[in-house]
Image (tube, rainbow, N blue to C red; front, side, top):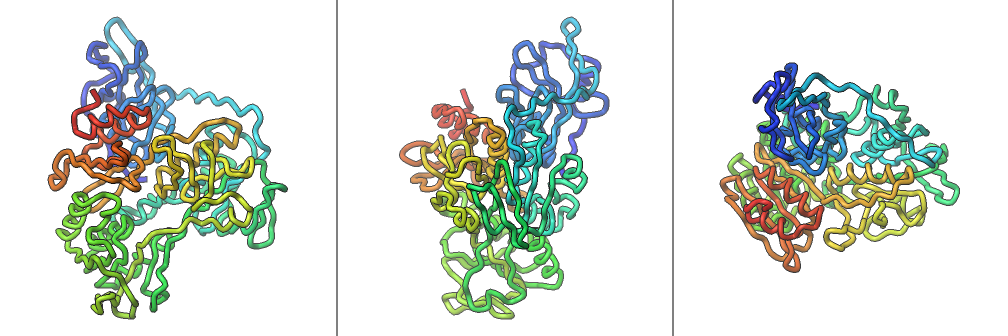
Length: 520
């Protein structure tokens, strides 16, 4: 996958550095043997690890140390300072770890530590684990199973013809033409072979018998399981409009969908995006990058107003308008024709390419058929276990008790899905690990990233610290007087600190950070 390379900066750790120059818990960037390295002091221990996040190449020297983790400022991946292992999504690959010696008052990095990470197999593992759904949660689950030392049979079942891909990239760089398709697969075929993961593509599970622990596939085959993880994801909504099935009307969820839009964009000149959602606006930005005329139609007066509030929503609108997007807000489509989209006001927006970005619906069919408890999603407990013992749910379908808000929530975020897949996998192996991560997502509009943490649904007040139009701000969202979520633009370190403060329930630190006053 693509990412930025880190220029070699700072001291040569191979030549040594005074221990006094290291500050407790603060990464120091340098290099050793031609590679970027960071040093981190935790008490008497000095750790040396690679300086580049394995997700998109984020600079770990600008990240946050939490315990013995280093967290990436871009998309909040976390790595173990002792082993280099990727502990939290979205990163899946480890970073290098290096050997460190103390010589008098000098700290010296002597070379890479290639010692295999010791893994303790689970004590009473199931005879097999089957994962239904080859998306973010499903892939993260099978990776976690092997990382935990599980040696039993692992099966990953997906409906699509391709293996798991980097879905956030489908609406961003890949759709814009800035990322090659080779970057998209989360893993190549060789990874599944090496890790003994049976990948069943273009396969749909039609029935689940939780008593017999058996799955039935659309082709009539049956498959037993010891433990089961449901990660069936969500399907994009296609509005029921006249003309909604015309060939120039597209949805975007899968690699196949993205390929179809890219192919259509080669000859199209004018596009209409239906929906001013995150996915709709990211598609709009990508199509503008490809040179198409783009119009966006949405029912709200301000795009993303219900999620981000007026100030940030207006900023996003202006940003897109600066790049040539034309908005038709407070409006809805009534029909799609071969050469345009007809609106409720009677206006016809010219288009030879139409993309619907009006949301998704969780794919609950299998869970409902199996009689699992449903509450606008698959109801799970704090360990992501469903009402059927040994059956777990993760990702877009799971509604779980969020300890930070006290609410049962279902969230359609890529990173949340991956982290839930990791937790569900560990619990399928017999661990009792509560899912307590603070939800995080990011959105990219041209060259402007927006990072968002927390659960802001139902916020009652919005406060801005910094300059939204200057692209340097933290926007906080309150419910019942408490900050429940924060969005930021180019405040990456503060966003990480806010996430950590929310995790530990430190409301005072959240208040200070949201006001731009530091963690104290």
